[in-house]
Length: 234
Picture 1 (cartoon, one colour):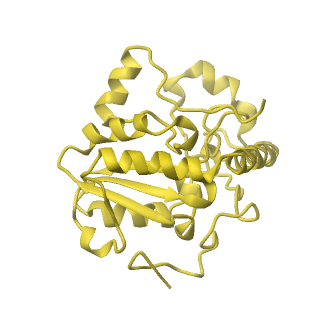
Picture 2 (picture 1 turned 45 degrees about the horizontal axis):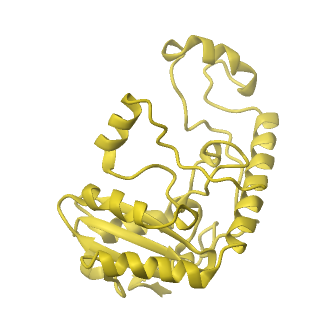
């Protein structure tokens, strides 16, 4: 089927919409591997989590704990989304679009092939918006397609704590994106931070601060926490 002018595959094991049944599928391979020399103390402290000496594969026990925690976080996020008011979300998004006139509604992603800039993926069902940028040759079309076809690594599903981790945009599927706005610009990182900060935090799905890689690096050097979290329990 077509979605925003692009073919999306019905046969994906993750489906075309995010569901609990396809979330947190176990993968024992580590995506966070570092050599022991990088942090010997951490390496030794986490040895029990791995079934091999090189720390490439997690134990079955670790995977089950991770899956349980990830599903708990999923349920908390879904309850949080359900508590939000869609009219308030729509009004907040509308104000941002009105202020940033360079953002245009996208009905077809094909003309955005190779165009670099900023894009906003709107997930109306969840009252969430994700703000992304790309300067890659494939442009906005390719980057959005990546989000739809990618999946967050099993060991990276939780970003922070179980009660505070924001779901990754890559955990959502193609049909979860109901609207797209985009702006073609050579310096999208300058617009990214402004758009993220203009939206109330409760409606923003981004897991890190905006402003591009340099801004994140400078923030880290300054001791600023770049991870965006939210309280999912009262």
